[in-house]
Image 1: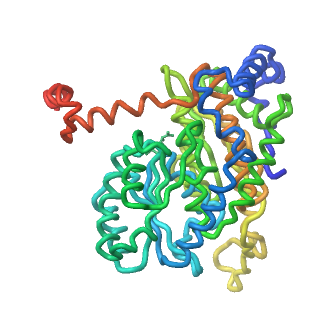
Image 2 (image 1 turned 45 degrees about the vertical axis):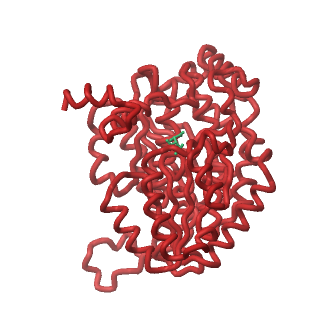
Length: 446
Ligand code: PA5
């Protein structure tokens, strides 16, 4: 199994007694029962828990066929979506392939992500990169009503219609709710005869990477989605038994114990730039799931050693409010040996002939100890390598840990009521007639 939790450095912050306290383990058992018996708040959104085995095989075959079609007719593809509708696929492509995926020599299309901001500059740049080559669009919105992707899609659809006329149907793929009454995007897709894929009702956006939402863009990149599902299925088997040695449950327990000791920020740390978007996916998963009812651990992230030269100072020495969860990727995809400095002038003869990943690993060990000594608790999650199977396992590990942790914290891990606040104000200000009254009130305050 590729994932292993190493909690040995936590002993300086949590005694054995605390880690084994009946109270926290009873709360964990209670949280676990809510998931297994579907009795917790939001239990109608537990579809992700059985997804690795219980997924729609016809839809899966359709995903593979669509990916092949896109790879065959497109030099670029634009994935339009925000939040859970893009983070998982972008994380997967960078983790499995590379953060430099678009720059690599390859026989799969370049992949751009749009509709995850309202920046006219970013949109113009992606548009100008894509419009002069053959490209397709995958538009993803579970609700089918989200403003950011709707605007980006309107613009891209216009370009595609102009460029391809009636053949545009071969280049637009829509992933949304099955119900055209609910999802305006579904209604539009039906009207225009675009191929559609369904986001299951019982799977929320941030838990949806193992549906077409994540799998279609990932498959376009050439990553093997069968291996992702089998990694997730293995994790499901491994973590679905209640046991004190179950690393997933233990992770949920430990982070709650640290929270109760005043550590209200968790920093996910990796020493691989390829993990940057995994950090973003993880932050959304935990941030939207736990941050409510004036409670929750604020999820943050860094890439080391890069950020050791910026945020490292704060983590070592600033306000003692955080703990770190370090992702240790044991095997790099490429090995690099440091050549000797034949002129012996850089004063670093001690690294001659060392492997770069060995230096990276030593940097990690040294940092874990330094931060521990500075008062920041550290736990390590060891993973074997950056591949499809590990990605599937990590997704399931964190989704389950997040749901458990949310229930331990006594919040509903599947809703996101706080997201509505900005939407109402934005709609009011851009003139949505539904919010005419709010518009007046808000404008008075600006
Ligand atoms: O996790 C969630 O539910 C959200 O982050 C959504 O994914 C995000 O708001 C996008 O929503 P939609 O897919 O409906 O456009």
